[in-house]
Image (cartoon, rainbow, N blue to C red; front, side):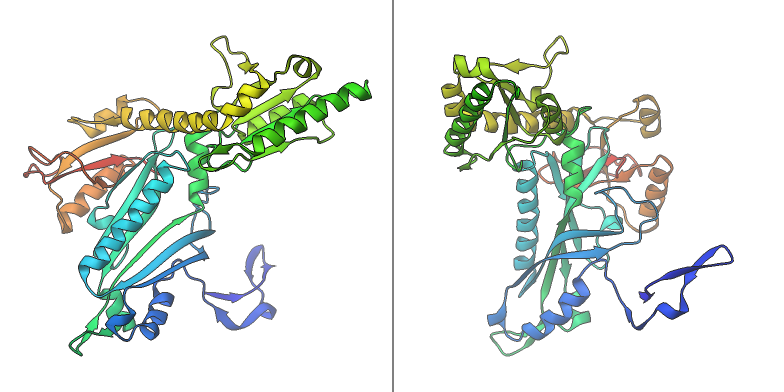
Length: 417
């Protein structure tokens, strides 16, 4: 709740300036269930109004003691969905549909492999019956919760008065869901695909998939014009090609800077394909090509290729899709190679597994109450958290790592952002 719009220094401390008091306090929200619930109560009257589906983009505010750019900030933009249904089956189906939407978005355009699964009881959204998430592994082995979807049961409907008249004329509580993902996905892309030279942007989301840099020497006007015309013709040809069923996005960079400076600026920004064109390329009908996902060769030098202009133009879309698939495969291999199973001693494993230990898959009995609280504290001492119980995982067998009781599911444990 914001009561003043300015601070002032008093005796070496910052305090609210009395002259800056707001006429009315401003209430900022961390999420929208309460606001949307009040609106839904007005919008829903009959079974004919259901299902009610609301989507919004909104800025929200959180109290973060230590902020991390893109990952944990005091204010961030996110997409959130809110739905109301006549019964549990409809709400659960929508909750899982939203989860799958986030999974396919991460795995597809962002090329970030994720594990979709159910959150343990203590990690549920407050008031929810169940919460599901998609979890991504960053290059340092830490988990990033990349999206969540919640089945809220009827508790929020009861609190907000979201009721409908069924076909028999009886008043019933709605079953509601909510789900969201945020600008933290930008941080996920950077940390999943970046390297020591900057970002490697997946081609499907790259603002410019191909950047063309004419190498103008400013010594011979006719030569420079020939290079520029060649580069424009190349761009025109590429603009007519398709990648991911859309026209290829190409930029001709004619800024007044040195070609090498421009090249490295696009390397840092992660442009998937960077092309340099000089007089010799014009003469030979070729171009100098750099793939951002394979920047260096085995000797550690810039891995420049010199394909024929016509062949490259024809195959550019296929090459971009190949880069997208390669980035996903690299991250997917890293994810699954760093999920460790059959661990008998968590503490010893994390002590001896190096700087980037990854995740551990454990079998557990899914306890609740005091037994669960004890496990959470035990993990907290090791700076570990439960991520989720993966959908489609192999059935549990044997005993729970924590309680010694018969295990009922498998759950992922790891350090997280």
